[in-house]
Amino acid sequence: MKYMVNVIFSFIIIGRKDENICRRKEYIPMLIEENEYLLIEEENDVIYITVLKKGFSLLDMNPLLTKHPRILINQFKALRDAAAEGKGEKVAIGELKPEIDWSVSPDLMSASIRLNCTEKDLSENYGDYLSNIMTALHEKGIAEGVLAETLRKGLLAQQEILIAQGTEPIHGKDAVITYFKRSVRKPAIKEDGKANYYDMSFLDEVKAGAWLGEKIPVTEGVPGRNILGDYIYPNKGANKKCMYDKGTVGAFKEGDKIVLRALKDGVVEFEGGKIKVGNHLIIEGDVGPETGNIDFIGSVTVKGTVMAGFAVRAERDISVLSEMGVHNIDEIVSRNGDVFIKGGIFGGGRSKIKACGSIFVKHSNDCILEAGGNIHIGYYSLGSDLKANNIITDEKKGRLIGGRAEAYGKIKAAVIGNMLERKTIIQVTGFDRSKLIEELNSLLHCYKEKMVRSESLKVRLEDIAGDESVEGKDSRWEHVQREYDEVIAEIFQYEKQRRSLIEILDAKGEGEVTIGEKAFPDTTLQIKSLSKRINQATKGTFYCQDNSMHFE
Image 1: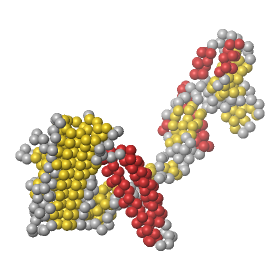
Image 2 (image 1 turned 180 degrees about the vertical axis):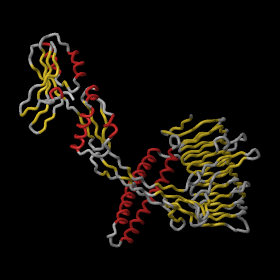
Image 3 (image 1 turned 45 degrees about the horizontal axis):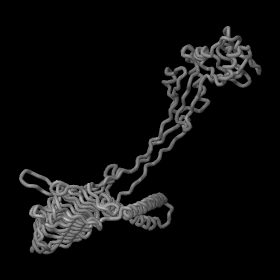
Image 4 (image 1 turned 30 degrees about the vertical axis):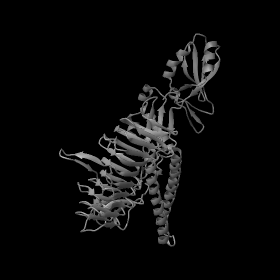
């Protein structure tokens, strides 16, 4: 290995040309290159040049550097001046690179080398280079992950070579929780060639023992080791808590999972962030003289119809599945859920449908519909009074004919009014967008605060669970768990409010009426305090912005 300089105690061993020459204290300059123009020497790891006469070109240095890869030129001005003047003066122009350049990553996970030699030198002295590398590995304490095959036959001259690689730890995986996915309440008009149906997945019925979710527990991970052999401990995965109502849902160890199963028959609900099985009353036939009026703490499914003069009231969702719909009923009221009338309503002027959430009907005739959420109408509303956050009909077949439709954010219909020019009032009370955005931002701020609080409480629960010495452990756990459950319930309530605000802000401007196909004359549109009377067939979107009504 040419020009290798190793200092061992007080001895200096000079490169392979003079590898048998050893001297004490003194250091004799070593001649590296000589020709009619120059001398290149090395002394104490410094490279010197003596330019004997003019005529030497700096371009001639390139083949010399290729021939002697351990030469590093770092004083270019001195070299340029020496070549230009040719005075025969000895000038320092660089330094001698080490035989082996070492590079160890800061995290001690890898070590690489670069051999400053020619391919010929490496080939002729492979064993010596390998021996020096092994010695250096020992001195540096690198014993883990040494790439023996690379050392044995993979060394290359003047290239970065990875020779040791630590083992990365395998970090633990977070717990994974999957819950029963409730059906999306998105009504659709379906055709089977004989009739059109207004249908949707409304209630998710389950039997006792049904799967409601599962948890794949957190994993600990596997330690790694750096190239010095030190262990690198993995991060443990983050644990997560299954949120379920313990009165109606059970958690069971099945294999390596925790599985949630229904403890009773009912419908799947999410309340306060917890999955539960809600009470479900199924009326196989009609609501009428045989059943009397229905008032139920839970959800109600009527597979028949609700007969004239009768009422159905429920705490949660109500669905009436008869294709014939309902006629001249008293009322159908959901105090904390949605209402679905598959066959529509014939009201006779007194029927009333009311929901804290949304209402889904095939059609409504001469009745009253009030929703805290949205009203979705498949075919038409005729002479009815409608009131909701948003009123949406089928974009191709939905009609609003006569009566009054009042919404907070937007109203969308394919057709408004009819050829007989029946008086139809469309009113959007509208909103202040800037105030609504401010309300949304405030809500998101509270949401984030609750999320931080929930994480803090979760850590406290884990600490209590892991500390056997805590006095009154059970009571402290229950107290913190109760607060944690309350915070999670608030988070889900904020999320519900967020979705409602987003739905309203989705309207154009500060209130929108969209007519997909045609609005007939004698239709009155009112958005906020601005009114527009339709005098000719019109199609498009009206919206209010900056105290003006716009049309596009």
